[in-house]
Image 1 (spheres, rainbow, N blue to C red):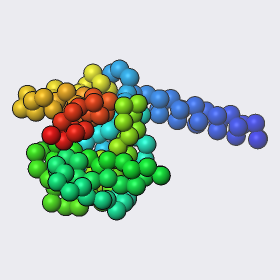
Image 2: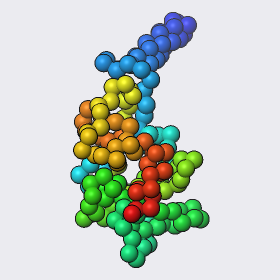
Image 3: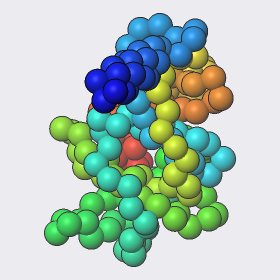
Image 4: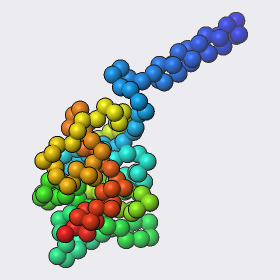
Length: 170
């Protein structure tokens, strides 16, 4: 009797594994995973490989005379880290709402915090299934990988961290 239960348990687990391993319908290629968050009116996706941590917004020290893109710094695990506002960079204006979260980005290029009003979820997508970036984004589009079907902007984090306009805020 016990042997029969083990076989049925193994069969159930095998079927579950096959179901979880199957790619969603309409998606081809390798799946990427990203965390989605909102800042201002836009939703952004940050690849999980570039994510270090998501934490409640710490007390930010505002920098006098700073541009809206880099409004301040926070003390993070023994170091000062710059805080960047994607809404100000892509949208061109500072968000009126104070950020509730900071999304800590860690790449070989830089470690920095992105402001987020809300952290939504994680999403899986195929790189070959992305929509093209609108031409109206201009030079800023080089910091994006593409768009999801729902309009989420997928960040190309290493290029974003190398972008002088984003990092130096001029």
